[in-house]
Image (cartoon, rainbow, N blue to C red):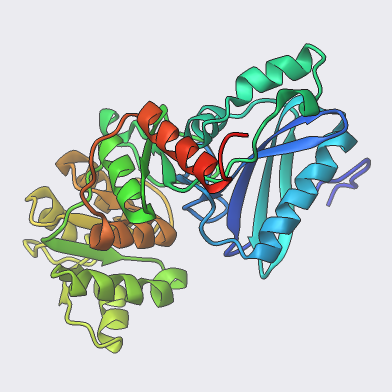
Length: 344
Protein backbone atom coordinates (compact mmCIF):
# COMPACT_ATOMS: atom_id res chain seq x y z
CA UNK A 1 0.00 0.00 0.00
CA UNK A 2 1.39 3.41 -0.95
CA UNK A 3 2.24 5.78 1.89
CA UNK A 4 -0.25 8.62 2.45
CA UNK A 5 0.99 12.06 3.39
CA UNK A 6 -0.90 15.21 4.20
CA UNK A 7 -4.37 15.71 5.67
CA UNK A 8 -6.86 12.84 5.25
CA UNK A 9 -10.63 13.36 5.26
CA UNK A 10 -12.68 10.45 6.61
CA UNK A 11 -16.48 10.53 6.23
CA UNK A 12 -18.93 8.48 8.27
CA UNK A 13 -22.51 8.02 7.12
CA UNK A 14 -25.11 8.73 9.82
CA UNK A 15 -27.64 5.89 9.66
CA UNK A 16 -31.39 6.36 10.21
CA UNK A 17 -31.05 10.10 10.74
CA UNK A 18 -33.58 12.89 10.35
CA UNK A 19 -32.18 15.65 8.16
CA UNK A 20 -32.94 19.26 9.00
CA UNK A 21 -32.51 22.37 6.85
CA UNK A 22 -32.33 25.80 8.49
CA UNK A 23 -32.44 29.16 6.72
CA UNK A 24 -31.33 32.08 8.87
CA UNK A 25 -30.20 35.70 8.73
CA UNK A 26 -27.13 37.09 10.44
CA UNK A 27 -25.78 40.63 10.75
CA UNK A 28 -22.37 39.47 11.96
CA UNK A 29 -23.49 39.43 15.58
CA UNK A 30 -27.14 38.49 15.93
CA UNK A 31 -29.03 35.66 14.20
CA UNK A 32 -32.67 35.43 13.10
CA UNK A 33 -33.82 31.84 12.48
CA UNK A 34 -36.24 32.15 9.58
CA UNK A 35 -37.22 28.52 9.00
CA UNK A 36 -36.49 25.08 10.41
CA UNK A 37 -37.44 22.45 7.83
CA UNK A 38 -37.42 18.66 7.93
CA UNK A 39 -36.63 16.39 5.01
CA UNK A 40 -39.09 13.58 4.31
CA UNK A 41 -36.34 11.26 3.11
CA UNK A 42 -33.66 10.18 5.56
CA UNK A 43 -30.21 11.74 5.52
CA UNK A 44 -28.28 10.50 2.50
CA UNK A 45 -30.68 11.75 -0.18
CA UNK A 46 -29.51 15.05 -1.70
CA UNK A 47 -31.40 17.97 -0.18
CA UNK A 48 -32.43 19.13 -3.66
CA UNK A 49 -34.22 15.81 -4.30
CA UNK A 50 -35.76 15.31 -0.88
CA UNK A 51 -39.23 16.56 -0.04
CA UNK A 52 -39.11 19.16 2.70
CA UNK A 53 -41.69 20.03 5.38
CA UNK A 54 -42.13 23.30 7.26
CA UNK A 55 -42.54 23.39 10.20
CA UNK A 56 -40.43 20.34 11.07
CA UNK A 57 -42.75 17.58 12.25
CA UNK A 58 -40.54 15.20 14.26
CA UNK A 59 -38.33 17.44 16.38
CA UNK A 60 -38.55 17.21 20.14
CA UNK A 61 -38.43 20.50 22.02
CA UNK A 62 -34.89 19.68 23.13
CA UNK A 63 -33.80 18.96 19.55
CA UNK A 64 -35.45 22.15 18.25
CA UNK A 65 -33.73 24.29 20.90
CA UNK A 66 -30.35 22.70 20.21
CA UNK A 67 -30.72 23.20 16.45
CA UNK A 68 -31.45 26.91 16.98
CA UNK A 69 -28.59 27.19 19.46
CA UNK A 70 -26.16 25.68 16.95
CA UNK A 71 -27.30 28.02 14.17
CA UNK A 72 -27.05 31.08 16.44
CA UNK A 73 -23.44 30.16 17.27
CA UNK A 74 -22.41 29.37 13.70
CA UNK A 75 -23.57 32.65 12.14
CA UNK A 76 -21.34 35.03 14.10
CA UNK A 77 -18.47 32.51 14.20
CA UNK A 78 -18.45 32.43 10.40
CA UNK A 79 -18.79 36.19 10.14
CA UNK A 80 -21.97 35.92 8.09
CA UNK A 81 -23.73 39.09 6.98
CA UNK A 82 -26.88 38.11 5.12
CA UNK A 83 -28.28 34.63 4.56
CA UNK A 84 -27.03 31.46 6.22
CA UNK A 85 -28.11 27.88 5.43
CA UNK A 86 -27.28 25.05 7.83
CA UNK A 87 -27.97 21.38 7.19
CA UNK A 88 -28.05 19.09 10.19
CA UNK A 89 -28.83 15.47 10.99
CA UNK A 90 -30.39 14.10 14.17
CA UNK A 91 -29.66 10.48 15.09
CA UNK A 92 -30.20 8.91 18.52
CA UNK A 93 -31.02 12.38 19.90
CA UNK A 94 -27.60 13.68 18.83
CA UNK A 95 -27.47 16.73 16.55
CA UNK A 96 -24.79 16.66 13.85
CA UNK A 97 -23.86 19.60 11.61
CA UNK A 98 -23.53 18.35 8.03
CA UNK A 99 -22.65 21.68 6.44
CA UNK A 100 -23.00 25.41 6.97
CA UNK A 101 -23.18 27.70 3.95
CA UNK A 102 -22.86 31.51 4.31
CA UNK A 103 -25.14 32.12 1.35
CA UNK A 104 -28.68 31.72 0.07
CA UNK A 105 -29.94 28.17 -0.48
CA UNK A 106 -32.57 26.74 -2.78
CA UNK A 107 -34.98 26.60 0.17
CA UNK A 108 -35.07 30.39 0.67
CA UNK A 109 -38.00 31.03 -1.73
CA UNK A 110 -39.93 28.15 -0.16
CA UNK A 111 -39.23 29.34 3.39
CA UNK A 112 -40.16 32.93 2.54
CA UNK A 113 -43.46 31.93 0.95
CA UNK A 114 -44.34 29.48 3.72
CA UNK A 115 -43.66 31.94 6.56
CA UNK A 116 -44.52 35.26 4.91
CA UNK A 117 -41.08 36.67 5.85
CA UNK A 118 -39.16 38.03 2.86
CA UNK A 119 -35.73 36.62 3.66
CA UNK A 120 -34.15 37.95 0.46
CA UNK A 121 -35.20 41.55 1.10
CA UNK A 122 -33.97 41.28 4.68
CA UNK A 123 -30.62 39.84 3.57
CA UNK A 124 -30.14 42.67 1.08
CA UNK A 125 -30.75 45.23 3.82
CA UNK A 126 -28.21 43.51 6.06
CA UNK A 127 -25.67 43.54 3.24
CA UNK A 128 -26.38 47.27 2.89
CA UNK A 129 -25.44 47.84 6.53
CA UNK A 130 -28.70 47.49 8.48
CA UNK A 131 -28.79 45.49 11.70
CA UNK A 132 -31.32 42.77 12.47
CA UNK A 133 -32.73 44.95 15.24
CA UNK A 134 -33.58 47.59 12.62
CA UNK A 135 -35.65 45.22 10.48
CA UNK A 136 -38.46 44.53 12.95
CA UNK A 137 -38.78 40.89 11.88
CA UNK A 138 -41.37 38.84 13.76
CA UNK A 139 -40.38 35.27 14.56
CA UNK A 140 -42.48 33.12 12.22
CA UNK A 141 -44.85 30.63 13.83
CA UNK A 142 -46.51 28.82 10.90
CA UNK A 143 -49.99 27.55 11.68
CA UNK A 144 -50.21 25.58 8.43
CA UNK A 145 -47.95 22.94 6.93
CA UNK A 146 -46.01 23.56 3.72
CA UNK A 147 -44.29 20.90 1.63
CA UNK A 148 -41.61 21.40 -1.03
CA UNK A 149 -41.39 18.48 -3.47
CA UNK A 150 -38.80 17.91 -6.19
CA UNK A 151 -39.75 17.69 -9.86
CA UNK A 152 -37.75 14.78 -11.22
CA UNK A 153 -36.95 14.33 -14.92
CA UNK A 154 -36.74 10.52 -15.09
CA UNK A 155 -39.81 9.99 -17.28
CA UNK A 156 -38.23 12.09 -20.05
CA UNK A 157 -35.12 9.93 -20.25
CA UNK A 158 -35.70 6.31 -21.33
CA UNK A 159 -33.53 3.97 -19.30
CA UNK A 160 -33.14 6.34 -16.34
CA UNK A 161 -33.17 4.84 -12.85
CA UNK A 162 -35.31 6.93 -10.44
CA UNK A 163 -33.34 6.02 -7.33
CA UNK A 164 -32.72 8.95 -5.00
CA UNK A 165 -29.23 9.31 -3.55
CA UNK A 166 -26.48 11.78 -2.73
CA UNK A 167 -26.32 13.20 -6.27
CA UNK A 168 -28.95 15.82 -7.08
CA UNK A 169 -31.11 14.92 -10.07
CA UNK A 170 -34.18 17.16 -9.81
CA UNK A 171 -34.89 19.84 -12.41
CA UNK A 172 -37.34 21.93 -10.40
CA UNK A 173 -39.64 21.93 -7.41
CA UNK A 174 -43.20 22.67 -6.35
CA UNK A 175 -44.76 23.88 -3.11
CA UNK A 176 -48.08 23.10 -1.45
CA UNK A 177 -49.62 24.40 1.76
CA UNK A 178 -52.50 22.94 3.74
CA UNK A 179 -53.84 22.73 7.28
CA UNK A 180 -52.15 19.36 7.84
CA UNK A 181 -49.18 17.38 6.55
CA UNK A 182 -51.04 14.59 4.68
CA UNK A 183 -53.06 17.08 2.66
CA UNK A 184 -50.04 19.28 1.90
CA UNK A 185 -47.94 16.26 0.90
CA UNK A 186 -50.63 14.87 -1.40
CA UNK A 187 -51.05 18.29 -3.05
CA UNK A 188 -47.30 18.63 -3.56
CA UNK A 189 -46.99 15.17 -5.12
CA UNK A 190 -49.88 15.94 -7.45
CA UNK A 191 -48.29 19.23 -8.47
CA UNK A 192 -44.98 17.47 -9.14
CA UNK A 193 -46.71 15.08 -11.55
CA UNK A 194 -46.89 12.12 -9.16
CA UNK A 195 -50.55 11.87 -8.05
CA UNK A 196 -50.95 9.26 -5.32
CA UNK A 197 -53.48 6.47 -5.96
CA UNK A 198 -56.28 5.90 -3.48
CA UNK A 199 -57.04 2.28 -4.37
CA UNK A 200 -55.87 -0.64 -6.49
CA UNK A 201 -52.79 -2.87 -6.36
CA UNK A 202 -49.63 -2.00 -4.45
CA UNK A 203 -46.42 -3.82 -5.27
CA UNK A 204 -43.66 -3.93 -2.66
CA UNK A 205 -40.10 -5.19 -2.97
CA UNK A 206 -37.50 -3.88 -0.54
CA UNK A 207 -33.92 -4.63 0.39
CA UNK A 208 -33.22 -6.74 3.47
CA UNK A 209 -32.40 -3.74 5.64
CA UNK A 210 -35.87 -2.25 4.99
CA UNK A 211 -37.97 -5.38 5.50
CA UNK A 212 -38.75 -4.66 9.16
CA UNK A 213 -39.95 -1.17 8.25
CA UNK A 214 -42.11 -2.15 5.29
CA UNK A 215 -44.63 -4.27 7.23
CA UNK A 216 -46.44 -1.28 8.87
CA UNK A 217 -46.56 0.46 5.48
CA UNK A 218 -48.05 -2.63 3.84
CA UNK A 219 -50.53 -3.03 6.70
CA UNK A 220 -51.68 0.57 6.23
CA UNK A 221 -52.12 0.01 2.50
CA UNK A 222 -54.13 -3.16 3.14
CA UNK A 223 -56.29 -1.26 5.62
CA UNK A 224 -57.02 1.27 2.87
CA UNK A 225 -58.24 -1.52 0.60
CA UNK A 226 -55.15 -2.01 -1.54
CA UNK A 227 -54.34 -5.48 -2.79
CA UNK A 228 -50.75 -6.37 -1.88
CA UNK A 229 -48.30 -7.98 -4.28
CA UNK A 230 -44.65 -8.66 -3.45
CA UNK A 231 -41.59 -10.60 -4.52
CA UNK A 232 -40.62 -13.70 -2.54
CA UNK A 233 -38.51 -12.21 0.26
CA UNK A 234 -40.79 -9.26 0.93
CA UNK A 235 -43.88 -11.46 0.67
CA UNK A 236 -42.44 -13.76 3.34
CA UNK A 237 -41.96 -10.78 5.66
CA UNK A 238 -45.50 -9.52 5.08
CA UNK A 239 -47.06 -12.94 5.67
CA UNK A 240 -45.11 -13.24 8.91
CA UNK A 241 -46.79 -9.96 9.91
CA UNK A 242 -50.20 -11.53 9.26
CA UNK A 243 -50.90 -9.83 5.93
CA UNK A 244 -52.43 -11.40 2.85
CA UNK A 245 -50.14 -10.92 -0.12
CA UNK A 246 -49.87 -12.35 -3.62
CA UNK A 247 -46.40 -13.42 -4.65
CA UNK A 248 -44.96 -12.54 -8.04
CA UNK A 249 -41.69 -13.72 -9.56
CA UNK A 250 -38.54 -11.71 -10.09
CA UNK A 251 -37.28 -11.28 -13.62
CA UNK A 252 -33.99 -13.04 -12.98
CA UNK A 253 -35.66 -16.09 -11.40
CA UNK A 254 -38.60 -16.44 -13.81
CA UNK A 255 -39.05 -19.44 -16.04
CA UNK A 256 -39.66 -18.79 -19.77
CA UNK A 257 -43.25 -17.57 -20.18
CA UNK A 258 -43.78 -17.09 -16.43
CA UNK A 259 -45.31 -13.66 -15.60
CA UNK A 260 -43.09 -11.34 -13.59
CA UNK A 261 -43.53 -8.11 -11.67
CA UNK A 262 -42.30 -6.18 -14.71
CA UNK A 263 -45.14 -7.69 -16.75
CA UNK A 264 -47.58 -6.68 -14.02
CA UNK A 265 -46.40 -3.07 -14.16
CA UNK A 266 -46.17 -2.86 -17.93
CA UNK A 267 -49.75 -4.12 -18.26
CA UNK A 268 -50.83 -1.37 -15.82
CA UNK A 269 -52.21 -3.89 -13.34
CA UNK A 270 -50.32 -2.11 -10.56
CA UNK A 271 -51.15 1.32 -9.10
CA UNK A 272 -48.26 1.92 -6.71
CA UNK A 273 -44.69 0.61 -6.53
CA UNK A 274 -42.47 0.66 -3.44
CA UNK A 275 -38.98 -0.55 -4.33
CA UNK A 276 -35.87 0.27 -2.34
CA UNK A 277 -32.64 -0.42 -4.24
CA UNK A 278 -30.46 -3.41 -3.52
CA UNK A 279 -27.56 -3.69 -5.92
CA UNK A 280 -27.17 -1.78 -9.15
CA UNK A 281 -26.77 -2.31 -12.85
CA UNK A 282 -29.06 -2.23 -15.86
CA UNK A 283 -29.88 -5.93 -15.53
CA UNK A 284 -30.74 -5.86 -11.82
CA UNK A 285 -34.36 -6.64 -10.93
CA UNK A 286 -34.83 -3.39 -9.03
CA UNK A 287 -33.69 -1.36 -12.01
CA UNK A 288 -36.10 -3.19 -14.34
CA UNK A 289 -38.97 -2.66 -11.88
CA UNK A 290 -38.31 1.07 -11.59
CA UNK A 291 -37.81 1.48 -15.34
CA UNK A 292 -41.13 -0.28 -16.05
CA UNK A 293 -42.84 2.03 -13.52
CA UNK A 294 -41.52 5.11 -15.32
CA UNK A 295 -42.72 3.90 -18.72
CA UNK A 296 -46.16 2.95 -17.36
CA UNK A 297 -46.45 6.22 -15.36
CA UNK A 298 -46.96 4.26 -12.12
CA UNK A 299 -45.85 6.12 -8.95
CA UNK A 300 -42.59 4.50 -7.81
CA UNK A 301 -41.22 5.27 -4.33
CA UNK A 302 -37.61 4.28 -3.62
CA UNK A 303 -37.24 5.10 0.10
CA UNK A 304 -39.11 3.67 3.09
CA UNK A 305 -39.55 7.12 4.64
CA UNK A 306 -41.02 8.41 1.37
CA UNK A 307 -43.39 5.44 1.23
CA UNK A 308 -44.54 6.06 4.81
CA UNK A 309 -45.27 9.71 4.02
CA UNK A 310 -47.16 8.75 0.86
CA UNK A 311 -49.32 6.18 2.64
CA UNK A 312 -50.04 8.69 5.42
CA UNK A 313 -51.15 11.16 2.76
CA UNK A 314 -53.32 8.59 0.95
CA UNK A 315 -55.04 7.74 4.22
CA UNK A 316 -55.54 11.23 5.63
CA UNK A 317 -55.48 13.89 2.88
CA UNK A 318 -58.61 16.05 2.88
CA UNK A 319 -60.34 18.32 0.42
CA UNK A 320 -59.68 22.00 1.05
CA UNK A 321 -60.89 25.32 -0.24
CA UNK A 322 -58.53 26.75 -2.85
CA UNK A 323 -56.67 29.82 -1.58
CA UNK A 324 -53.84 31.78 -3.14
CA UNK A 325 -50.52 32.03 -1.33
CA UNK A 326 -51.26 35.69 -0.56
CA UNK A 327 -54.63 34.79 0.96
CA UNK A 328 -53.06 32.10 3.14
CA UNK A 329 -50.32 34.45 4.40
CA UNK A 330 -52.88 37.19 5.10
CA UNK A 331 -55.00 34.72 7.08
CA UNK A 332 -52.02 33.55 9.12
CA UNK A 333 -50.87 37.14 9.75
CA UNK A 334 -54.34 38.18 10.91
CA UNK A 335 -54.49 35.19 13.28
CA UNK A 336 -51.06 36.11 14.70
CA UNK A 337 -52.14 39.71 15.33
CA UNK A 338 -55.36 38.54 16.97
CA UNK A 339 -53.47 36.13 19.21
CA UNK A 340 -51.12 38.91 20.32
CA UNK A 341 -54.04 41.16 21.27
CA UNK A 342 -53.80 43.60 18.38
CA UNK A 343 -51.20 45.29 16.26
CA UNK A 344 -50.18 47.76 18.96
